[in-house]
Length: 342
Ligand code: OGA
Ligand code: NI
Image (cartoon, rainbow, N blue to C red; front, top):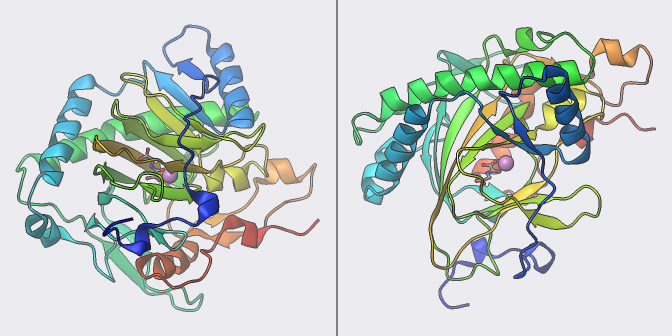
């Protein structure tokens, strides 16, 4: 395997298959269609059967999208010393980062993260008695100079879509459209640029190892290269999400799984690499405030047993962060750790 750092090499069971299975069945939902009740049904179906769907006519202006793609490409094209001027550190997880590990294997990627709303806070440590908070501050690079403004505008526009989608999901669960809105005041939502450079060993490494998103909802823009794979619920097969021009890929995260008491599941996904082409993607992670206690909604647990104990989002993330930054050789904290035994 030449000079590839063994830190990138996946265990045999997690290596990608060379034959690609295109996922024909991932629902494509038109958010401008006049038939609102049909839209809600489509969302319910998609969330139940796939945990993933794509949306078109989503309302995020194409100009805003074009500008952020441009800025992301310009940023990653900078020399690495320039990018490292805005590196994340032990205290503040925002900025540039190229040594992320998913499930203790290094991802073949570099990223740039920023939060959508400032000020944003997270607990300073995972100790439940430690009430100290740290403020998350965005680290804006000097180049390209327009990056900050472009990012702020994109984040505002995409957040509107996030609320719209959360409203539809709420309706699809039988709740009022605004049922979840309060949870997103003082949100810790963030946007990430992902850059997956061409990889000489795409059969051994992954751009992002298999994982579930910890937040409520993810709104992902991807380019035309493709590489996102989703674990199909019906048979556990990894299937490729074919890029659809101008569409967003939406997936339910762990928090919706808990709120919905397992009505909807957060589905595993990963990113396959390409030996010739680099790939870019831009996820928007829609996340509640750090102080929120995440638990099944009380309307649901009147009739059925809660499947999860409440967990504090900020402390959950602080525990995760500790194990993500370093390769600690331990399993990451998962919502399954809060599962109530049957
Ligand atoms: C992620 C992720 C998918 C992609 O960043 O959490 O799943 O296609 N990214 O880049
Ligand atoms: Ni993800």
